[in-house]
Length: 428
Image (spheres, one colour):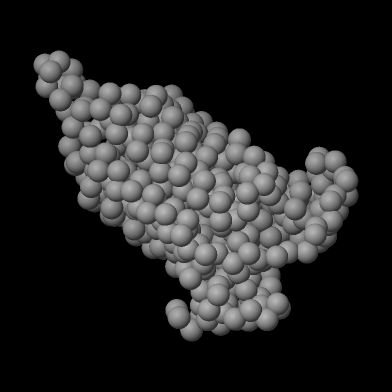
């Protein structure tokens, strides 16, 4: 790893040495891991808060809605903050906002208030939006432009690592393994039932207090570490209308595909634990560990996909991986027993390359309009706020059948596959 870091942080065109960029790059890479932890803990929170707050499936999916709606709302303001305050101060702002949302889990649990939990998650989402808007370009400019892509891939691998670590942490420190049927809850005395709900809600406090404290310590580190002022050439200010890029078919269809891809990914992980419980009859802790295996396969898929790009075009790889994901989703819907869990876990491998591949295809050949196109593709992640709620509503309508709900990500993969086939080249 040290060799890869030193290689990718090769001497910049201004002649500055790699030593000046190594520590900042390590700190920025840590941010990728931290926001990966936040996102992947949501998959634990959804089934957990469903129990603790006695929610329907659609209500529990509001966890995703809160986080991804914050991304949508903060996408443009985050860009303004970056221009106004620069990389270092924006990273600190994002960390502090992120930490404040984590600490808000304590009063949410103490009051057994789902509304406060959702507010906390929305605030976390705002902090994550600021961090991602800042850390991605900063990692890209910390060194030679020729190795920018390699630096971003290295940093993103730690985001994939979090997809494996977060479910394991959540399974051990948040999930209790206790779950009662509606009839069993109704048979309890009021004080016993309230005690059960409070115990379930309280288990989130320690992990999120620790997370908030780590975030504060990282913010302090950024405050006192001298980050290099990386100069950039003045950029061409585009006079075209924000909506004018929609004339390019690869971008307009790419925004639609990205909307459905993000929705599919969030749907798969958000209901993974309950799908494993219902489809394979495993307990929630074991299901949490399987979700960790899903995260490992997701991380592995990024490395394998990067290797395969030496032999396949981005579009062919997208078609190939999406076709496999679609077939595995069918297995999850129609299968029984552990085949359901194995299918869902394997989908992580094939979904891993979709976001960056759709992003790259969407901005392909757009020249001066690339930044405007990128804004649209980032805003399209609002699919993660909308589609999981739709999936939860479908599950409720189908009498709590989780497998029926997976029709939603199945349709999403059909849309992504169609983009792979039809969204070709820059066209008016």
